[in-house]
Image (cartoon, rainbow, N blue to C red; front, side):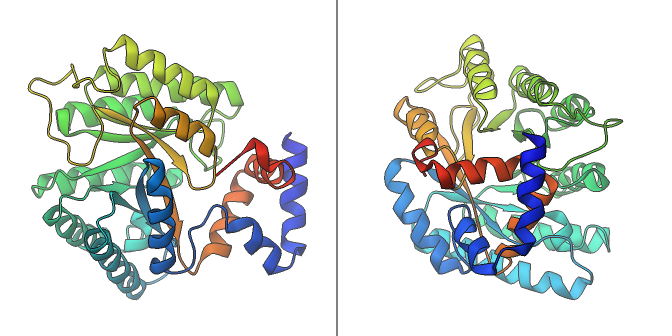
Amino acid sequence: MGIVGRSIVGLLPLAPRFIVRWVAKRYVAGESLEQAIEVMKRISSEGACFTIDVLGEEISSMDETAFFIEEYGRALDAIVSNGIDANISIKPTAFGLLIDKEAAINNIEKIVRRAANDQIFVRLDMEDSRVTQPTIDLLFSIHERGLTNIGLAIQGRLNRSIGDVTEICDRLGPDSDFRICKGIYLEPSEIAKTDYWGIVNSTNEAIDAAINRGSYVAIASHDDPVIEHSLTSLESAGMGPGKPDPRISPPSNRIGKGPGYEFQFLLGVRGDVRRKLCSDGHLTRVYLPYGARWYEYSMRRLRENPEVAVHVTKALLMPWTNRQ
């Protein structure tokens, strides 16, 4: 499958832009916030809630942060005014983490504090391994400023992930909140698992570690082995639909959250599985990106993980296998 994926990715730069747009529209909510709101209103009828992501990441100057600060402010206002069950996800490099760390912390604090006023949660996306530790340090800095409506993503494929989960749980206790995924960034074998089952098993171990330490766990995977393992682990921990979180006494008041966990899916991917989990009583959340930089986002994801191209091609040629 690796050769097939790389072949598809190699051909994509030759494809007309409208072809890439046609592919991307399934996975990107649109170029504008207004389009994203309409998509959320439509899918919310299926019982899903959302994480909004404004497309764009690493910047070349601090002047570029103004766009993200303003756009996320608009997104927060739209969540409230439209009564949508949603939180937001931000990439620290879009706020200047690799240029001016202190300024980035201040920028992100403004967003998190504004979100806290409306009881909206903020997720720090985890980018490539250059910024793994700086992102964790950023999380601690925001908590030290008295804000707890923030958590971060953990990439299961990284060898350090179990240690990171442990450290964060030790420092933040029941306020620790993870989005655990396999990870989109391809990293060298010295620091990460690189084969499918190695990545799956490492991701499952990270999920178990977070569950066992009493954290809130957002399980972000489309892979059956991860979903099935998570369901078994949750049951073993006494967690599930309609049950209070037995790991915390009294149960933590996590606004807009599930009973200690939730399942997350990318927009346009495995909607049938998401709907089945929702019908079984599990909280499900759709990760919903939007923005003018949809082309760069789509091409980057495909370049960094060619296997995504195989799933996209399968969805286009056999759409019945991957209903939105």
